[in-house]
Image (cartoon, rainbow, N blue to C red):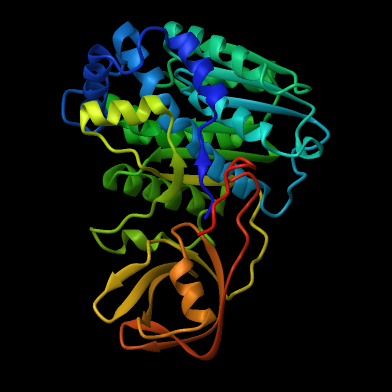
Length: 402
């Protein structure tokens, strides 16, 4: 199973910008304050980045927690065309960039690609309302760029209030040209909390980005917290954008029918990235009682072009393998529906081994399904194959057997 190991040189670069002791009582207290804020346990403060203590806590804890998440949709973007980015500059726009988390995650992703698959340069434009955050982001990007010899990186920070009229971002389309990649990481949920019509503003913002700022062959990457409500909000936005015909989903969904997770009030769909966290995160987890043993989040990879057709036997695994009395079950999604696939624990052989090895987010192909009541089972002679994961889901020296 692929595991992301947080690079020590990246940890060192963050330390240089954040300064101070990374696991002090002061930082731990500020991390707890941020956690309550993000979980909705207190009054929303959209200007939290203006606090030096909260910004330092974010650098030490939430930046390393959030930056690897962008690897998953980026890997899916390259799944069918690993050389998609090769031979040309990559023009990237980060909406609500904050401390540069998504752009740093992008650069970390690119440095583990084979040199022949990398772009010739990265031109990043970062939009945020916080001058302090953009200043620290520039310092971080400068340090991370040094870790990728042969890949020129330019970074242009622009102060923009994404809650204001959308016309403020229109000039970017003229001044910067259209973008190959537009990223919105943990920003839609914050826009939604800023005002009673925040959700509508968030929806329109991404529609504007898709229509006016995204190149015809480009991709729009959205990452949101893996909480129930934020994930279900993203599912609803997905349905709205797909219904408009403006955008098409490439991942994680294998279809463009209404999201089946919204068929009940209790379900939501998330991705999970196993990782070995940096020391600071492990230490702050102990101090605060938080737990980041794996990274869970929701995401969308959207494009203007329709997705390439897949084999009808392809399914996305949308749960862990559940260990129940006498059998194992797992949830799968395709064709606009979720199904439950079950297998008796006494089953043995390669098929049983393949069943146990399934992980949330995997793409699998199944030949030989039969429905029995409300669940599905594998028929005698069935085949279950895991489709190889996309490139750079983990750094090259960080692959462990599942």
